Figure 1 (cartoon, helix red, strand yellow):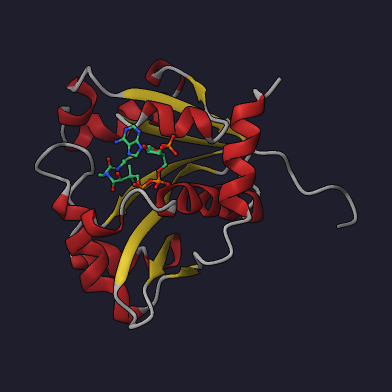
Figure 2 (cartoon, rainbow, N blue to C red):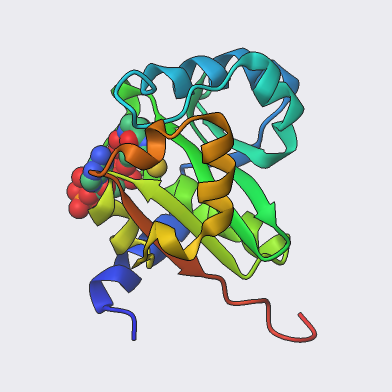
Length: 177
Ligand SMILES: CC(C)(COP(=O)(O)OP(=O)(O)OC[C@H]1O[C@@H](n2cnc3c(N)ncnc32)[C@H](O)[C@@H]1OP(=O)(O)O)[C@@H](O)C(=O)NCCC(=O)NCCS
C-alpha cells in the first residue's frame, strides 16, 4: 500500500503545470552532456559524452527555461524488454529545490509505461526523493543485467557501497485506454 505522503508527492509532481518536460532534441545534446557530467566527479551520475547522448537521444527528456536553456534532464537505459534503468537524472544547481527533479522522475515513469516496460530501477544516493515518488527499496542482486553490464566496463559504480537501489513497478494503462 502506498503511503499517503508518497501519493501527495507523486500527485504534486504530476500536476505541476509550470514545469514542462519534453523529449530532448539535437539542440540539447551539448547541454545534457555538460549538466550530467557536472555531477560525475562526485559519482552521482555516470559520465556521458556528447556522442553517447547523440546516440541515445530518444531516451532523454529535458526541462528547459523560457530561453531554451536546459535546466534538468533524465534518461532511460534499457536492459531488456522487461527492465529499464532511470539514469542521468540531473538538475542545474541554480534550479534545484523547485520540483524539477520530481517532475523528471515522474516523466521517466510515464515514458517507461508508454514503452511497456513493467519495471524501472535506479541506483542513487537520493533515497528519500525516490521513496517519496513511490519507488521501493530493492537490491542490485535482483538485477544481474546491471551487474553484468558494469563488470564489462568498470566496477566503480557497483563498488560505491553507499548508493542504494530502488525499483518501481509500472502499472500498465487500463485495457482499452
Ligand atoms: C537529485 C536532484 C535531481 C533533485 O532535483 P531537484 O530539482 O532539487 O528536486 P526537487 O526540487 O523535485 O526536490 C524533491 C525533493 O527531493 C529532495 N532532494 C533533492 N535532492 C536530494 C538528494 N540528493 N538526496 C535526497 N533528497 C533530495 C528535496 O529536498 C525535495 O524534498 P522536499 O520536497 O521534501 O523538500 C538534484 O539534486 C541533482 O541534480 N543532484 C545531483 C545529481 C544527482 O544526485 N542525481 C541523481 C542520480 S539518480
